Each structure stands twice: as C-alpha cells, then as structure tokens.
Length: 344
Ligand code: DAH
Image 1: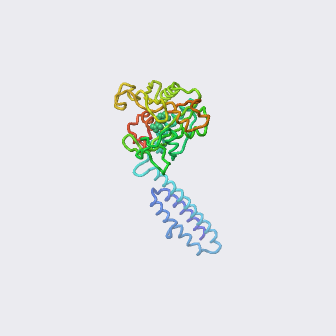
Image 2: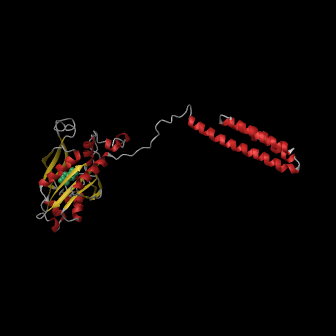
Image 3: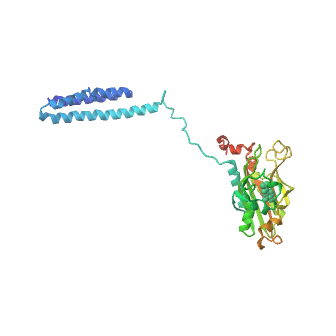
C-alpha cells in the first residue's frame, strides 16, 4: 500500500512540475498550484490517505508525499519569479525598448548672479584685493553719516530706504562695509565686499533687493590713475579683452572727484543698439577718490587725510550679470525659472 502511494507521489510531482512550468500567467499558475496542492488537490489527497495506512507504512509514505509536495512548491516559486520577470520586461502593451536612454536626474545650475559674483571676486582677488562682508541690517551712521551723506540728503528720504527702527536701516548700498573695514584694519587696504542691498524700488528695472559689490583701496600714494587702471582691467577681464572704458565726471557724497564708468556696449560693440540706447556705451559703475570727510569720520592717525589717499567704486552685480550673459529682463533673475537657470 505504501509503495503504491510512493510511486503515485513521485508521478504526481513530475506531472505537477510540468503543469506549473507550462503556465503562462499568474492566474494560470495559481490554478495549476491549486490542482495539486490546494484543499482538493491531488497531492493533498495523498497526504490525507497517510493516516489510514498501517503504522509501519506511515512514515515511509509520509516522507515520500511531503517530498513531492516540497518539490512542487519549489517549482511553483521558481515559475512565479520567472513569470514576474517576463511581465516586467514585457511592460504593458509590448516589450521594453532597452535602447531608449534612461531617465536622468535633475542637475542643479548656478544662478547667473552667483556666477557673476564669483567672477568678480576672482578678478579682484587676482589683483590683490581681499573679500569682506558686512551686515545687511545697518546703522544710519555706517550707511549714511560716515559716508558724508548728512541728514536731509535726498538719498536718506523715506521712499528710498527701508527703516527697521530709528537709526537702523536695511543697507541701501555696500558702501558701509568700507567704513566697517577701515574701522578694523589699517592701511594699506585693498578690499571688495559683495552682498545684497535694499531700496524701496520696484519696477521694470529695479527690485527691492539687489546685489552690489563695493571696492576700496587706501594707501599713501593712491591715485586716480590707479583707479582707472584697476577698473579698466576689471572691465576687460569681465566683459572681454576688446572692451573699451570711458570715465565721466560725476558726483557722489563719499568721493571727490567722482567718476561714472561706461563700457563699450557688449551687444553692439559700440555701434549703437536698443540696449545702449544707440549711444554705444553702457554705464556700469560709480567710483572716485575717497572724500577726506570719510577718513575724518573714521578718525585716528592711520586715516589722517593728509597722509593717506584712497579710491572707491561700486557696481550692481545683477546688472553686470545681465550684460555678461545677455539676459534682457531684470525680473528673470528673481523668478528662478529652471528653464533660464538650466542655460548656465
Ligand atoms: N554706493 C553707490 C550706490 O549705491 C555706488 C558707489 C559709487 C560706490 C561710487 C562707491 C563709489 O564706492 O565711489 O549707488
């Protein structure tokens, strides 16, 4: 009796394996499994017969039927995996095109203002300038008075300046960092300070926050000629070697004499276009020799205006970035549209 069961178990195992391997899908596979191992399955039926056997035969038959059962379960598991793999690579309606490029992740890009900022720092560093930073919340004294902008000066009127509280403002330019640097370091000084500045201004060409970089040189024999040389060198390094530079007399409270600096238009090379309003020139920065009043505000022998001279300059990083990268609208710099950023 047990021999018959053994043979039957082995036969059923072979038959089940063949049936399972012949299945073509999940449901098909589940049905085949049920036919052999389910409640009404033929291998299950053999297992049910075991208790009816003579005690001596039970162990023998039990081992044979359980072996058959395990073998069928193993084939089932193997078939389930290979059907799953086949379904995956069949992917929906048809086979997967393995030659298609994979999906790559998003790559970050540096913002054009950051790129311009870094380029400016590199150029001035190579000319021996150190880089400083100052607070964005500033006292009126550092932002105005020490820079020879007395109370009542138009630049101090409420419509231009964000006041935090009496005597405290959001800095309206990076020039106060000149003051802070001179209060901490004695000449000779060669420094620049890039950073955000704030003004109550919001239209096509102004944003309430923008970026400036200020420069300051203080030494015993600093001249307007050195100022011109440094700024011309900067303009050529930043906009390209063919860039022309012109200095126009101007006025700033903290410099005397003062000059505004134009570069030949980077779009039309000076022949005249919409960007330069057909003048061939673009105004890019303000500059001048440090007014002795500024040294007097610092005080002390080290900044005695009879002993030292200096020059200073200031420019808008956002505008420089627009000109260098050909960005037509200031607002594009603040929208953070990845389609713009991805170009850099
Ligand atoms: N602080 C000026 C501004 O915000 C820019 C400037 C002009 C800075 C001339 C200077 C300078 O140091 O010499 O508009």
